[in-house]
Image (cartoon, rainbow, N blue to C red; front, side, top):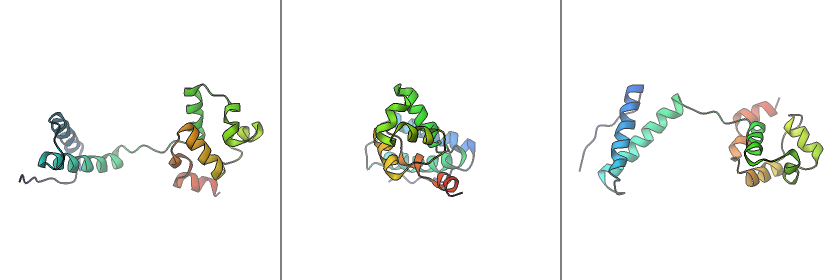
Length: 130
């Protein structure tokens, strides 16, 4: 059994080295249950933890996420009516005059494939409770 000394990734240099090692291991296509596969899993976990701190991506704004999906799919405001309600309600939500109901969130999540975390997260909860 191979004994590795692996530690938390703390610097950009260690991050680069870990990523390089991950690439090397991936090229070998290790089988699950092997030492190489275990090393890959461990390094991936350490790299992920480093990225969460140093390269975190904020959850997008829900209105901006909807507008992005609408643009990508060529949708108009009226196309949101089955998920949000009448034209006036769609307008109120897209203009930030009203927030979504849970039913609207669920429908938009399913129809537009927008993660629930975009609609419900700490940042949103703080903003809507003011």
